[in-house]
Length: 172
Image (cartoon, rainbow, N blue to C red; front, side):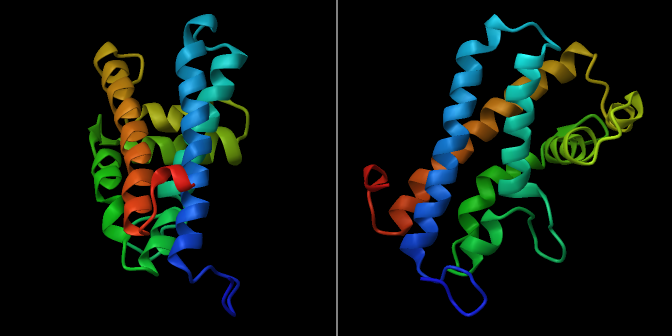
């Protein structure tokens, strides 16, 4: 049921929409993980999957923060039900240091400059590489570790939210 502002007030409905979005994200992430070896680094196939993952993460957790403690669509949806603390594990991963910035900031910056508001030039990615040089093996390895960790925390969020709503995950 939508309230006067066009938002969902009911926790069960909020959980339904968020869990469904997480299921889509997990499907894409798992498909990407299974197919990753079939695509060369820098290929259109690998870029498509990675860009999709970054877009989902930005929408879930990062964009349009404003004065809220966390950006993304999940925070305000869960805050209405006083469940924003369910996002703490994901927030901690996103705040992980990566070069001179954070993992979440790299995703947000990449999404904004290379996917959504791109100029289709090297300068789009140059801004990111000033903060973290992804050509360095240590950053590549840390990126992979954090990407897997945010996937796992997002997946666990669906379980935590289902429990908070009083439903089993299989109900969704």
